[in-house]
Image (cartoon, rainbow, N blue to C red; front, side):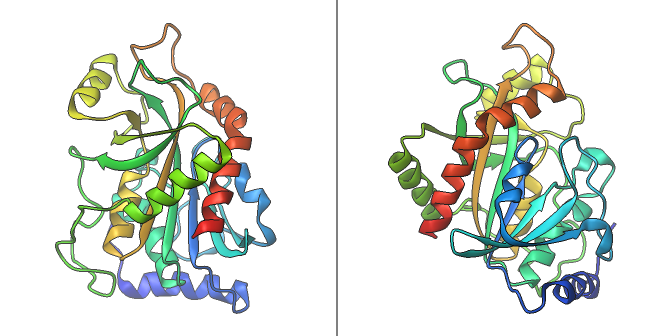
Length: 274
């Protein structure tokens, strides 16, 4: 499904009507197990996705399906508690719809988070990873179809989708908090089935340090819109073939709960430095 620029505008206007002049500059998309960070927003205004024209519901476990607008560390923020995934049956235009609406609301920076499997045996489940790049070779682009020049050019550059300046902000924040921070490449897979051991080995050979089912499409859309992007992965588990027990949704949610404190501290520190 493709959307017109007028539909994005309609969605943005519906949200503005709820915000009373509030204009966020920083957007955040919270992944599986990390959604409770949105509860820390001060003076929150919650807007369920179901109240916004053309939005789709978020059905993944642990995803509440709402925006929370307010303040964090002195920054005006728009926090997505839940995202849309291609495996839910949505097109990539639907998966990335919210990113373009956030841009129309005035957001200039996007912080993306996810929980993903770790492909490296020298790292551990529970580690945080700064995303320096991603691999999304085997699926269509969210920019497929008619280009909307109001957002960006037909052939956008993807050399620095994850903004180098913001990566340095994250490194400094992690060092000041003494939080170990891995750095690596996120490998996007469709889902909803977890990757096979052979697919994990292939991802590792191609340069992927973590494998997951989100984030990359949203970052492509954000880059097209001219947004700066900072990305974090919670390495919630060792990927298929690197552990004895089967992978499960509960394992991902439990890892998010265990990492909540350090994740929250790191993101808050980054916001202070923006």
